[in-house]
Length: 113
Image 1 (cartoon, helix red, strand yellow):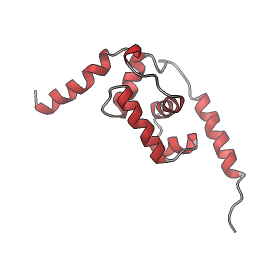
Image 2 (cartoon, helix red, strand yellow; image 1 turned 90 degrees about the vertical axis):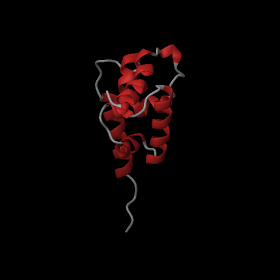
Image 3 (cartoon, rainbow, N blue to C red; image 1 turned 120 degrees about the vertical axis):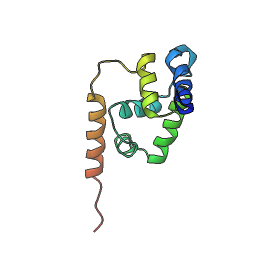
Image 4 (cartoon, rainbow, N blue to C red; image 1 turned 60 degrees about the vertical axis):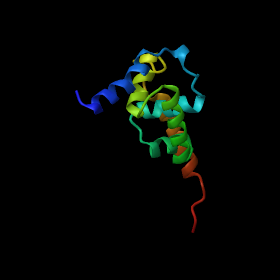
């Protein structure tokens, strides 16, 4: 086993054994960002859907990774599923409705001449 594998294992072990009670509660916006990321949306797409900047998305991702004790986004999503923060079976209806609401608000803005 290489040193890299040992480091990766040491990073993933705490999140796999942590419980929801061991973590700070996620804010509503962090949960929204987590939901988008779990659906496979990029940071840019997440920002567009939620009506926030990409920089703000990055801030929420940083908070998610810290609260879930994760080293990257896939690790955070896996930890959220394991902790029961994301249900195993869910659909993207809420996210899609937000996306359509945001798209409608963008199309009603006056376009520069």
